[in-house]
Amino acid sequence: MHLVDFNIIELIAKSTSITVGLFFAVACISLLCVLLVDLVEHVYCSKKSKILASLVSMLSATPELVVLFLCYYGTLYILKSCAGHYIDCPPFAAGLIALSIIYTGYLLPLLHGAKLAVPALQIKSAQHLGLSKAQIYLCIILPQAFQHALPGLTNLAVSLVKDTSIIYLIGGQELMGITQAEAIASGQVMWFYLVAMIIYFVLCLAIEKSMSKCMKQPVGIIK
Amino acid sequence: MIYLSHNMLFLVSGIETTLTIAISSIVAGFVVACLIAYFYLPSTTLLHKGLFAYCKLIKGTPILLQLFFVYYGLGSVSALQHTIFWNVLKHPMACAILVLSNNSMAFVCHLLAGAILRIPQQQISGAKNLGLSKFKIYIHIQLPLAIKNIMPYYHNEILMLLKSSSLASTIACLEVSGVVSQIVSQNFQNLKWYGILAIIYIFLACVMLAAFKAAKLYLVKS
Image 1 (tube, rainbow over the protein chains, first blue to last red):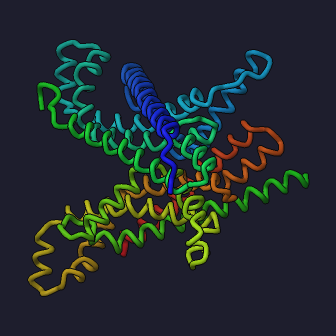
Image 2: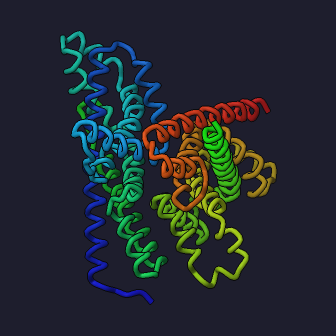
């Protein structure tokens, strides 16, 4: 028998909203970062840069846990060396930085693959029309690559919702943290874990359905 | 010097545990997925619907939560403590292998089912004309072709399992992340040791991908 206490329901609802907010924040930051990095790479390097590719593959081989701890302790170290004494770093800030770095690393190969699916003829005709490299990237390559990248983006979005749970390990109080704290406090671990699993499952399902709705709408003039 | 060598031995035992967990989960998940992918193919049976829902649940929940569910959740159910399952549930490494192979099975099932659906129908109808049963068609034709088709996508799966094995350190399993956490709790040199841990994981990933490439070449040859 589990206690249906309104306080617990409120806590779980609040922590779910924190998880969703974290998801949107990391998604926005990593998308912006990857677009920036790719734009700079497209404009200034004629071929795909090998250093960036090897950095990204090394990042994708490192566990999220390790990147999270490195970001957390690295931020603390930087703050301490700047200020001279210990400054506390909120776990969500470190988690945001870590998850953004990880997902930028996942998004870069995805974007490269999606860019390859854009017909090269369009880029050539745009070059003949006199468009600059940045204009070609933003107006022609990007909208069409987005449609090709959507299935991979759906996978990454679902993976991101699940990865927000690791912030519990540096003390963040989102859905996983609140679940664990309440489970240990009340002693009825199974109920809390089941509720958390259902909430994560519903979140992942919602993301999948909304992204699949995006895929039905055609983007761009030339299909 | 003795202190350094003590840390090195500790790290080596942790790397051994990590490789055990990762390789066991890969192999177990692959074998079970090969057996179960037949029921994952689209059909109207209750078994398919149940399996589909179960795999969707596994793929939609974080691995950390599943680890806690199995180790702390199922381990706290007093009814289970007197059954044979307790032999698995009391060892954190066995729980980690169980959860990770579960995850691997769910993803590989999905991959295999997609690969099976892409096999040209002429092969299946030819086999049916020869009088092969559904089970024989699955074992001799659909499965080998599907495994060959998913090999390029499998290296992602291997990396995912290696990275998820680091989460086993949260349920008191002394694999390499757990070992480094313990070392760090004693000497507080956080950045240095987590940097070493990142390098260890990159090295392990290179080793595992090289082994997988060798296995792939052997499969393609035969």
